[in-house]
Length: 246
Image 1 (cartoon, rainbow, N blue to C red):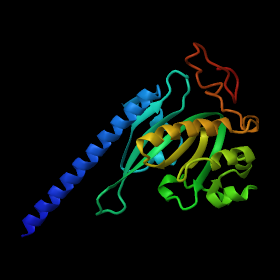
Image 2 (cartoon, one colour):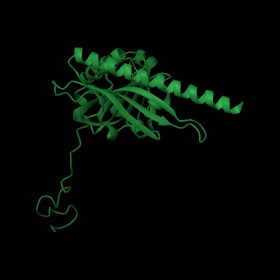
Image 3 (cartoon, rainbow, N blue to C red):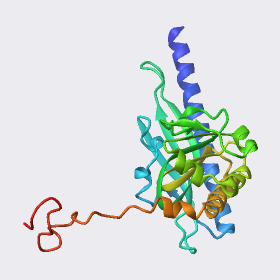
Image 4 (cartoon, rainbow, N blue to C red):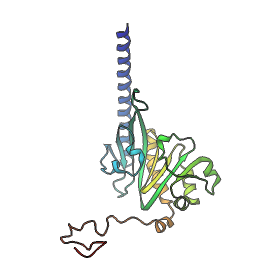
């Protein structure tokens, strides 16, 4: 009797896995067709090597993780892109790993940001950056009612979230969080239907257009490399920053 139960469980697991795989293939086909109609680039695999190095804690979570179904506009020369992201986590030593799936859109910012987390009220912690900072109340009360804002630098958060930016974020569909760190802004939600992925990409680009110009002067971009980083590759020894020339 016990063997019959285990066989039934194995069959149920196999059927569920096959059903999930078919849904993923159907979603990929829908995204591909939508991108063709919208003249966007699409790849089932991630062609961008920097995704694994994005400066957000989410991309280091889980026992395994991956990116797929990437959408971007190759003609504009824009670095914005949307993609599906999944991670596998164990909630206990003896439990079956849980796979979580998200829809993401990433855009570059022309300055160095502090860590900022703008999430709808009640969003699960797995989506959040879990910023080690205070919860902020801003001057737009309707924004405070909808979003929970946390930052490790209040001055940066207030400069970044001016009235214009907050109103732009208020137009986003429900369930989307905005994470900012270093020179990247990430929009993330639970896995979206194929048609809404393209809308998420455009939403990220639209929000970026509302970033206050003053932030660039308050938080200028970090230099790509230090003055003494390539001492040997220059073909000669550069001056030592703490002593005489070598």
